[in-house]
Each structure stands twice: as C-alpha cells, then as structure tokens.
Image (cartoon, rainbow, N blue to C red; front, side, top):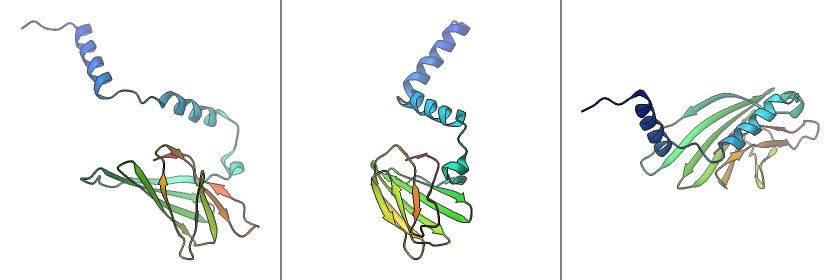
Length: 150
C-alpha cells in the first residue's frame, strides 16, 4: 500500500469532518450577534443583566433527554434554572433566591414565581432564550439573564 500525501490525508480528514460534524446553519448569525453585543458600549449593569456564574451538565438519559443547570446572579438575587429537553420539547424549572413575588418571561411564555421562589416554563421552542424577571415590587427594577440556548 502506498503512503498518502499530506494534502490527500488532510483532504480525507476535511471531508470526514464536514460529513460527521458540519457547521450549524445558524452559527454565523449567532456569532455575529454575540460579537455585536460584545463590541457595543452597553454596560451589563445598565441593561440589568444577570451574570452566569455556573453551568453544569447532567447525564443524558437513554430516551434522548438532555438536562443542564444554569445559575445566574444579579445583586442579591440568585436564579437557578434547570433546562430539560426531551424529544424536542423543553421545560425550564427555576428557583429565585430569596423568594420574591415576580413575573418571569421568556418571549411570549410567562410564569409567576411562587412564595417558595419556584416557577416553571414548558413548551419553549428550541433556540436562544433570555429570561426577564419583573419584580411585583415597583421600586425594584426588572432584570434579565444573558441569552442561553435550549
């Protein structure tokens, strides 16, 4: 058997990579949006954004279930979010600490925080989301999470 040239070998690797791990169709648009946001002079405090402080992935189930947990912090408020996706349907279970009466929005999806700090959003489409938290105490400003993907 003859040896492959460097160029032929790289061509094989390139073709396998393109077939087995193609670039997502929306990657360029998502990266452009992220770069535009990062390049802007907008301060996260002015936008009232929470900061992502932790992300953990849980084991994927045998039936195609994927879950992960995100933790956001804004001032004295902690938000723990568990995202679960099963067969294309998604669910967000969230906990606000300390518990406080507020409305949580993800686009047109709306939930109320219970007196224990818990809320849930179901049926969100797969894609990019940002949670907006609106305290019922009108003296407290609304704030949002950074965008994350389901």
